[in-house]
Image 1: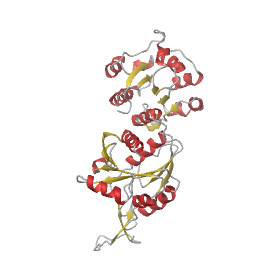
Image 2: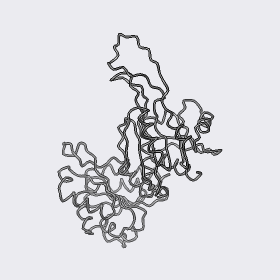
Image 3: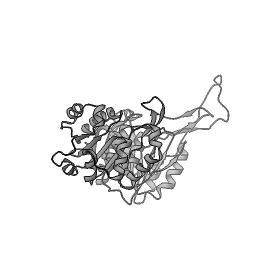
Length: 383
């Protein structure tokens, strides 16, 4: 589990979004974290301390002067404040310590993650923006709120960020920085091969897997280049992203970036075939005959043209396909290959089997970000 034996302080302040923190606590506990909840006085208006006590297995802390708790709590592995109100952010930005949570923040030297939640008018206020900026200059990780429907009924930026983003920020804080100085190239998503201006050949890939690998590599200190086909996924901050549509475009971009990469992760699902594109829309009354041609094999080209790069490929099979995966690994000169199934398409979790030389490692079903991290750890330690 990603956060096994990690001690995380979860600070909850007085926002209606506090009810979401209950689910955040559940997610962190599921991944093995030991959670200590600190509630502000205002937070108790929205969620009962008993709820957090029951789910965390620890007493909820709330009194400021309680056996110097803020000093001992400073030895935890991470501090997460979610939701963080405008009031808390203002106090934190100037070092005010008038309750247990702000006092703990003052005594804390580990990674701090702050997830604001408030009305968009408050968040866009120039004072709030300056306070958030100051928190970042102090080294705190601020997970920007999302746009959406707010408690007042209007839409705007101020909703507590999706819990997965907060978990990702915590995962980044705990990630080993073993890829510092390395450049990692990742391909992600599907490609489209157009038959006419509106129709195309594609597949069910969402791009989530490739984006998870890009995020994991970035969190581990790498310079990351992400070449992605059409997808709704948002690239991780600080990642160079190249958007493409066709397999040939992806091949061109990947081939160019591969020369500068140390590691190549081929997580995309490019179309294997293409057809000559009709200039005009094909009419339904026409008899359609397609002459398909093979598209460039991006993974094979990279495998056979590598110098000192580490190349990780993917083998998606609908039947037990370990033999086929091993064949691809050998024929395409890959360093490792991940055998997976269509079940991993368009969902937030993944599982698979990592094959590397004679070694075989089953990667359990889990969040794709955690999955990507485990694959990287296993593959690179055997490189």
